Image (cartoon, rainbow, N blue to C red; front, side, top):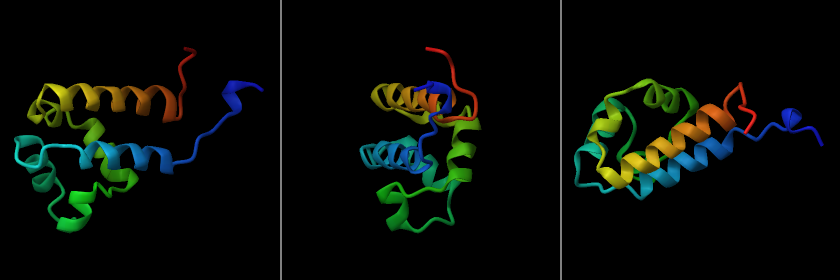
Length: 95
């Protein structure tokens, strides 16, 4: 099967961000920044990491968000960005 024709469902990206937010330390700057940036999201949705595509794209474009994360969360966020840009995005890299 030609790998260029494989398209993964959008819900994989939503699931990854959900996992990332759920394991974030709720007491540090990163989670507080998310609450501030997306203040219209309910507390329950924020705590559970329920985001929609446009919100995820805003976070990807926001260079300031990663500076608010601790070392472990930053490493996880960078891995998510890498998967988002190179695997789940519209343009897939060869490797």
